[in-house]
Length: 188
Image (tube, rainbow, N blue to C red; front, side, top):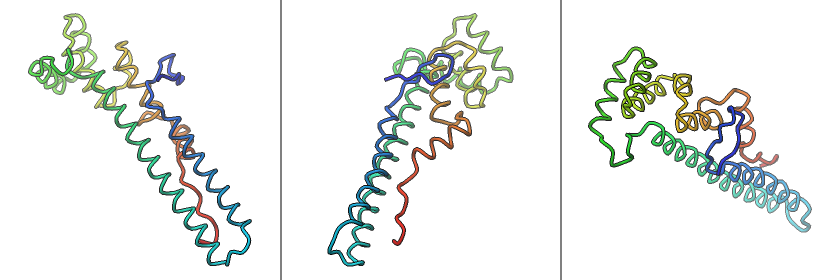
């Protein structure tokens, strides 16, 4: 599943974050509906009404915690997949791990990663390029990673802009509101 995210037309491979966000919102709404129903129930003592409200709240917060865990697990799983696609050893799991480890060591020692990426590009050294981009990513040089035009690396950057460390303050606040737990009813 892909969704445009305002990152220059890059589509973000999503793990269906909307499912979790909508389910969290429905959970908050359902709790309010349930609390209103309990308030309208006749024949309940104050203690029984309080207990039912408490039970409804406990159930809603339990479901919310599970949804939040699923959301966070989904983000982390997608991040790992994108990192492996963008920076893993060429040729997939059966690639040449020895040459990739050597390329990683060389990239970690490099002072000018941009020059190293350019050199690897000119020489057709995909393992060296991926290793240098991975080190650049770890050092926070997202600009270098994006400038290379590597589609997998750009997809990872777009994902991080939507779900990870590259989110804007406004996006973090919006996400916080969307993922907030149900409000505790008054009187509990």
